[in-house]
Amino acid sequence: MTKNGQTTLMIGLDGATFSILDPLMDAGHMPFLRQFVAQGVRAEMQSTIPPITPPAWTTIMTGRSPAQHGILDFFRPESPGSRFLRFVSTKQLKCESIWTHLMHQGLSAINLNFPVMAPPLPIKGYSIPGFVTWRHLRHSCSPADLMDTLKTIPGFDLKIIAHDFGLEEKVVQGCSFAESEGWIKYHTYKDEQWLLVLGHLTRTDPCDLSALVLDSPDRLQHVYYRLLDPQCFPVDWSEQDRQIRSVLEGHYRALDDMIARMAAGAGPEANIFIVSDHGFGPSQECFYLNTFLEQLGHLKWSERAVSDQDGAGDVSMEAVRNHGNILDWEQTLAYVNTPSSNGITINVAGKNSRTGIAPEDYDTFVNTLREQLLNLRHPRTGQPVVTRIWTREEAFDGCELAPDLTVRLWDNGLVSTVKSDRIVKPRRECIGVHYPMGVFMAKGPDIQPGLQLEPLNILDVAPAMLHSLGLAIPAAYEGRVPVEMLRKECLAARPVVIDDAAPSFEQQAAASLEMDAEDMDLIVKRLKGLGYLA
Ligand SMILES: [Zn+2]
Image (cartoon, rainbow, N blue to C red; front, side, top):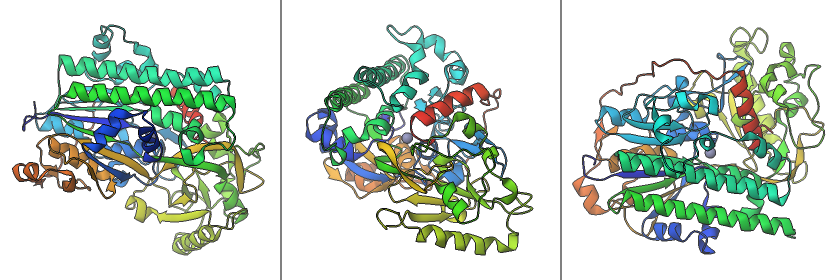
């Protein structure tokens, strides 16, 4: 029980978007969710820049923007300006998570399957991180003996909450109906295993806040977007398309049932929030940004750079790990380090590079490059390729490890970093990519029924959670409690209180769990499978 006698449940649906959920609700595949939003509130929700999973979920669990919490991408440069990359972990987190904040307020939390939660943070409650390989999972949970407890859950398949990479790669390369069906059902099964964990923990030791991320929407939408969004349906459905669509409908029906069961488990007195970290939409073509920088004379490939032949934008794992080797650093002024960042790093002589542009020429260079990017026209449509550019100051408040420029493309896609003979090529087929507008839905005793709100910001989720839990909002939080969703009686009884006390922050002192090369291979495989490393 919380200070105000309520519990709070947050269900994270990675990548959930109304462009898919609404048609599924209308067609009767998600009856519980349809009823949920009819009895509660819904809003679109603006994600982080760029709208990718690690910074976005970290914003949800800290109430801070990427510049403040320190997680900007899947990867981070080893040091400012370094061409070598490592995966992000809680070691880069620069502020307190809501889980630790709750502990300091005497409240407990369950958080399951959140990215960037390893090594574990100090919390009161339970934590199992997402994005962790099987080998590290046991040591990444909190409390330390949690895995032993979970083994006792009847019917629970412990290993499934880590990852199976083989099947995933196959699906992305194209596969039979049977393989697609197996892969989709694998996600249904995996989501169910997370529900078993949540159910067990909430029955045996209920916490004030329970939060679970289900990542199946993101995984399936990357591959099958064209079969999920009616706007993108094929003109001619093949028999296999129809079969896969039917299995996908089955998955979303199962997901709806899981949401219904979690809501029932939380009880009628719980405030329930359903949020996504970003939205989703279609992408038909691939933009080779490093190749464009080469055409501008800002980048030179090394002899080891191999041109992308089949137009898929593929890059070998080896090339990602040794990305630094495909460029001639002596003659490169600007480059894209990771496709997931959509960010350009500029080599500044004497700062992050031995060679590069002179520091006094930096502003002129940035302004010229901005113009060049904004003036670039799509060879087929004549429309701008780059629709928005943010400087490091604009997007990341000057954070040193952030790219100098971050771009948004006409189709919200992620750029390719590899060499190509053309700057834009069609993809093998339409895929799903992250769009900025995710979803926010809420229902419960605090929440008004049947309201569609103006779009919220992802920064507003943490304040909404804390208010639901009866807590003041730390002044350092950058979002706001969406008071327009609250019933008048609730707001009168519990007005929003801002806590000006300086936030405490303690890094976990536990043993280092830096990812090693083997883990890096597995995660690069996964990212490639998801279409990030294109
Ligand atoms: Zn995501």
